[in-house]
Length: 280
Ligand SMILES: N[C@@H](CCC(=O)N[C@@H](CS)C(=O)NCC(=O)O)C(=O)O
Picture 1 (cartoon, helix red, strand yellow):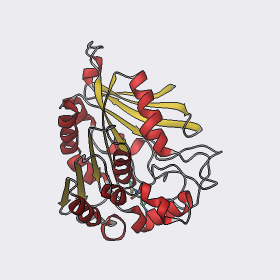
Picture 2: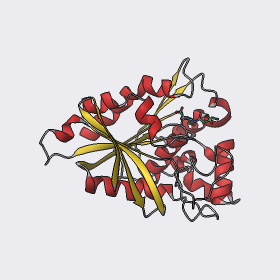
Picture 3: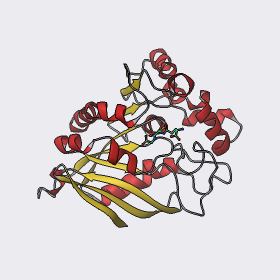
């Protein structure tokens, strides 16, 4: 494992690490924000971790340079870990379009070739990465997960598939029902194949119907989001949550679009929400 960026930030450090991932079979970058509490000599005290999952086209950089999250992570003593969005490297399959292949891993384990060889982002994010973080950093097993768009889908699906592993989950502008959205239909057809039954295991709205754990969901969605009606449609999840009695707070934010300006506006509230659950 090699540290490739190290920058002082709000009393802590914004770092980027590079390592060989076993789950993905390639070299991966992930960002780690270590708040000041990680360096205050209380080495016995481990800090909780918020995992951030990105949307389409992103790398580990977008959140750390645009969301302004470090200030709030420093305030609350939370480590933030933000992995890249797909396997990377010349040996990894790719597509011409921005919404399939590299930069578009959809946080699932692909079953179809040529994707199945490397595209195992679920196992990376839910298994390999936390294991590494908890071994190499002053990180406790108190975990929260959040993300944006494709990453909002990832956060919801990973939390719902792994009951007990996360203390809280939130999302910005998530793809709540990828089986019913053009982005999801394209990605799931390629990664999982034509049998839509197999898609249900990777669709938050479907998973919610049979969830074993009633982990409350917090979702912020911009009303002026250019993808709201065509791809995101949070009311589909809201209807499923109401039908199954799953706790969901869906906040529609007037004027906000799909960008990181939206995320920056509400990330402080999300981090406070996660910090409260992580402290409890
Ligand atoms: N067609 C758009 C869609 C991609 C997009 O909007 N990506 C969002 C996530 S779904 C994002 O976070 N972009 C990077 C950024 O704003 O920093 C593009 O290629 O820019």
